[in-house]
Amino acid sequence: MPRIRPQKFVHVVYRTRRFEAMLDWYAKVFDAHVQHKNPAIAFLTYDDEHHRFAFINLAVLQPEGTETNRAGIIGVDHVAYTYQSIDDLFENYVQLKAQGILPYWCIHHGVTVSMYYGDPDGNQMEFQVDCYDNNDDANAFMEGPHFAANPIGVEFDPEEWLARQREGTPLTAFLPRTQHMPVSPVRGSAA
Image (cartoon, rainbow, N blue to C red):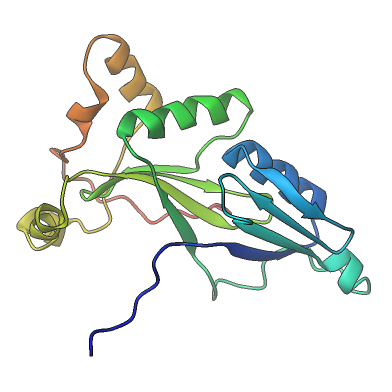
């Protein structure tokens, strides 16, 4: 019998002591709206799904606690969201930048062009676009020498890419990873 797999990504639940800041950040970043909110929990969505995010307010449920930072490096590293096109990815970058929200890491992984963001609690998310039209080509790149030499990727400056786009280079020209060095150090939102 073949493996049973999920049909789609549904939601993420975060525990926080920065309840209002987290709701505000996710509303801005995802253009989400509150489906339900009470002092202890809130549910937000950005599409027709009943909720994509839930936030548990530890200040209400565990008022004696004082810890506001992540307990350690073990746990969820990041959640990834794919955009339909590189133009959409960069338009999202421009819109978020206008609200003072910037990525902490912009990297061309070879199979994706990715921008990483950190929310007020330091939870990390990857906004990406696929570089290949199909999985066979993406898998071939991952099995090739350039990915073997640099499986992390090469950092890029989104402002430089946008300037080159304004000069006439389509953003789709950046999808193939033509520069394979230097290998980027892995970065995190707390860095």
